[in-house]
Image 1 (cartoon, helix red, strand yellow):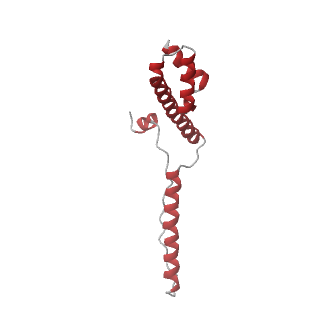
Image 2 (image 1 turned 45 degrees about the horizontal axis):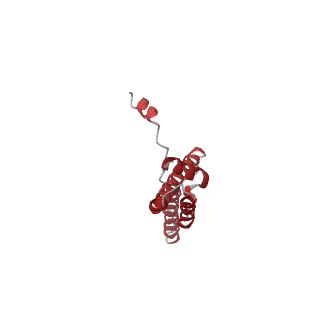
Image 3 (image 1 turned 180 degrees about the vertical axis):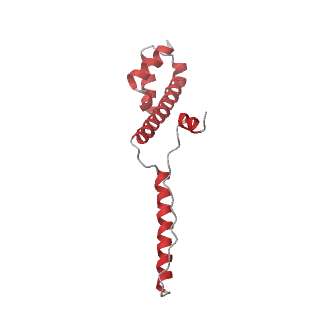
Length: 135
């Protein structure tokens, strides 16, 4: 009977959204109808809340995973990508300022040092890495 009750609660009431008060009301109603014993009402409420917390965590993990996969598929820059670009911009701005400061004090134009930094490429898939390694 308890397994049927748990399944019914999960499906009919969405245990993930139940508050303690709502869970207590539900269990009290089951006790009044004789579908649950008064002695087990406390454990039923705790079981409902524990199950709800577990479902919330599972739902959150699924949503996080799906969002991450969707962002990867559409090739949107990550927070790390943006941070790396911001650091690079700051470095370049500092170089520009250094060049400006150096050229204002001398009569000959300063020859800037140009560093070529290739763009980062995404990591190769395992099969591509094996092919390039000659495996």
